[in-house]
Image (cartoon, rainbow, N blue to C red; front, side, top):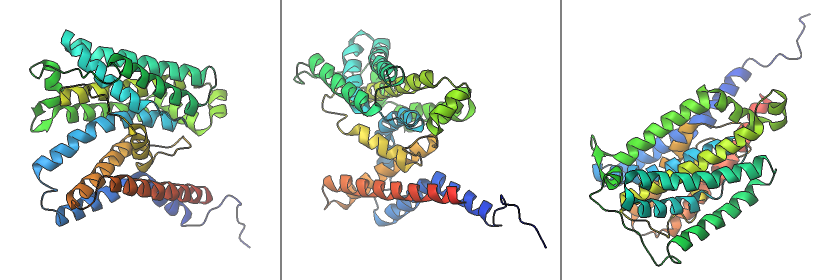
Length: 331
């Protein structure tokens, strides 16, 4: 009689596990391609060069914020301060632009990066809840913004002939410079997360913090680093947006943290941590922008439907991720 080892799996288990993993990783990309194809066939103006370029540039700023958020969520954390940091970064960049491009870029990076660093220290060293710490940072950043702009009554403008403004408005090979900068940042982020020891620590901390500590991973340092990266990304995105708009708009960034979280989760990163992809976050951003653009193309629907559709889509993705995660464990 043939003996059966208790660890033996059914023949199709390995294939099913691979299929489930591919669905988690590339499901958003398939949805993006399908939706883009349907929109191209349904609306004549969707696939035009101007519309695609506008979507790409407007997606770039959210994508940079989502890049930093990806590192945070992979560790199992959350950052609610990025929307306010984005707005603060834009105002500081516009104010600093009068002293040159270096000031316009370094000032928001320094301030927003410092706030991200403090977030990380409070979360990693003081062991405070990420939700509470970053919520407080969100209010702090918004308070600094209001203070700098006299309760929002003052708008700082950027000289549209300066080199800083060119970073937001110029094109390279017909594509806006912010898109090229975002692409370069995503390539660098993907390399760091997937090919470096720091990236391994990020996954390990998100997978099982106690096990990561036992393996010698610098858990606290990793947490501090990812929140600092998130702050830097939000500040840089705000600066690029100010260069694009040629002004520091005070009302921007409201709800942007939720958009960034949605994009990251839609892209396949688990909110529980330990699993995620930089490329998936970019796909998630593009998918949200396509949904918004399609609603605008319809014309008879107001902007509120963007939130309804995006929220419903996010709920479906979270449910699908939960089901796929349970299926992988069963396989």
